[in-house]
Structure formats: C-alpha cells, structure tokens
Image 1 (cartoon, helix red, strand yellow):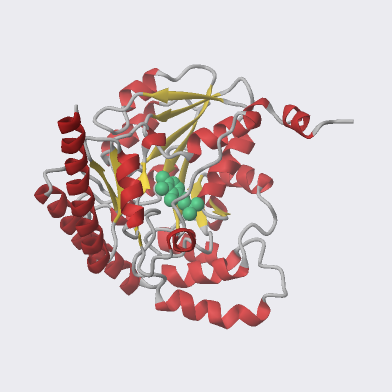
Image 2 (spheres, helix red, strand yellow; image 1 turned 180 degrees about the horizontal axis):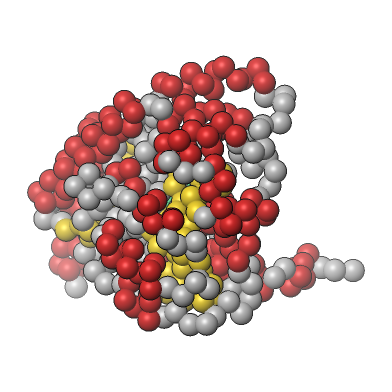
Length: 381
Ligand SMILES: *Cc1c(COP(=O)(O)O)cnc(C)c1O
C-alpha cells in the first residue's frame, strides 16, 4: 500500500518543489480574521472603479444562457480584438486570464533540459510555469530594478527556448523603451520564443505609444500577452489573450482546453473593448492616484520605484513584512514583495482618491509606531 506521503514522490520533480503563487489577501479573509468593518484592498492591481457599465450590461443579457457551453472558439471576442488591432483572428489565442497563456506557452514549448530566461524581480508566474513542466529557469540580475536586456541576451544559449519580458514589469513597474525591446527581439535566434507580457500596457503614458503589435509581421517567434483583468476591471471573470504569428496561435490553441473562457468572460470582455469612456476614466484616476501616492511618500521621506503601471513599490528602508501586518490591523491590504527579492518594499495598487488617502494615513501611523518601537528598543539596550 502507498502511504499518503509517498504520493508526493510520484509527482514530477519540478512539481514536488513547487511553491504555489501567493495572491493578495482577500477582503473577506481579513474581515473574518479581524472583524474590521472598513477594509481597503490595494494588493492585486485591480481596477478601483470596478467593471464598466457596458461589460455589466452584457453579462446581464446572457445569464439565462448559462446552461449552454460557451463558444469554444471565442469567435465574437476574437473578431472584436482582430478589428481593434487590425490583425487576423487567427493570430489571437484566448486565455482564462493571460496567466493561462503563460501556462500554454510552457506546455507547448518547454520540457526538462530546456531553459527559460527572465529577469530578477519579474512576475512570479514565470518561475512557476517553468518549474511545473520541469524546464530550468535562468534568472538574470536586474539593473535599477528593471530588465537588463543586454544581460538577458548574453544568457541565451542553444538550450534557451522561451524568454519572458514584462513591460511594464510587475511588481517594480519598470518600463523598457519600445526601441530597446524591439532591438532585443530582433537579436534573438529564431529558436527562442519571446513572450512580451503587456498586462499593464494601457497605463503606459501616451508620450511613448506601445507599438509592439506592428512587430508581429517581422518576428514569428513573438507572443504578446494582454489582459482584461487590470485596466478593464474584469479580474474576477478571467479573460486574457495573446497576439502572435498564426503558427504560434495554432500551437497554443492545440493545448488549450476547448472551453477555457466562460460565457460571461467572453461577452464582458467584448463589451469592455468598446467602452472607451471607462478605460479613459480608469487611466485618468490611475494617473491622479499615482501623483497622490508618490506625493504622500515624499512627505513621509520615502523613495519609490518609478512605475508605469497601476501600482507602485515603495522602499521602507526596513523589513516590509511587519509593516504589511501592521497595515492589515488598520484595515489596509497591500502586497509584501519579499518573495520578489524586495524585502524592504511594499507594492501598493493605485486606488480611488479616498482609498489612497486612507492608506497614506495608515502608513504614516504605522511608520510612526515603527520608529517609536525602534527608539524604545534602542533605549532598552
Ligand atoms: C496581473 C498580471 C498578469 C495577468 O493576469 P490575468 O488576470 O491572468 O490576465 C500577467 N502578467 C503580469 C505581469 C501581471 O501582473
């Protein structure tokens, strides 16, 4: 008979050593634990305005159809995306969140013996999907918290099969210039698949428009991933997609589950694409909130990593975990980033004006307390 512990030895080596992704703390969990009435969650880069009116209306219209399987080809959503980006629908792969696309890439292109390159401080899902399929991660040290593209290029060997680049990156918010990213892709051997993760591209300031889609014509090994979770406010529905050569889309669609996008996600995402008012409002609230938070950090004498996304990582010059916990007791959920090798930072998602203010006040209180505690401890020695 097999003991329950032995079951672990049956799993793939990579899976045995896998530490699952740790999401931001849900509001309900903190409510259960502390019985607080007011909780502000700025932990998962969600849209503080919620979903748009058009997405909500579209969901209402299909509720009575939920006994039917969704459209497994996602025809309407793909048509809408193809039109928006002037691409062929055959270049689009829909995912249950863009996270699923990252997994599909790993499943379709990786195996033990092949390498995946990504940057230090890069999105936590890259090491997860790499390890789950038994491939090896090559982590290139960051420069100023951002991707060192020259270092990443220098790390390419004949074993390299996939490279992940997040632009902007999460949790640092660092942004690579369009010219630098294109030069990097152009320099890659055609045996390497390059995933350009643009989960936050909508928030990038319009002074340098994102034009990565125009590169698809030149680079059949390029995969651009985008999502409805962040700027479009639909994180709870799980809808993301990739844009690529038709060949890569064909490969990804072979390993995709037939009904990976649910009916509500499909119709809400399509409606959200046509809701420019909601998107513009989201971008403007984000820009104002970024100003508000960074001005608050300045007042507190704190530095932060300049961010192009809808979040900002602040340097506390002391371990972030205790500050994170003290903020929880005040009803504010932010994100510790020690698991990203940023032990002294906390990542704050941009909220509404009132949420940002509530957080800044809580942070000021907690830091004052932290300073007082350090003095007491020092005095006691
Ligand atoms: C949030 C995020 C994603 C994807 O989220 P989905 O909800 O799965 O679409 C992808 N990449 C980065 C860098 C992210 O921060």
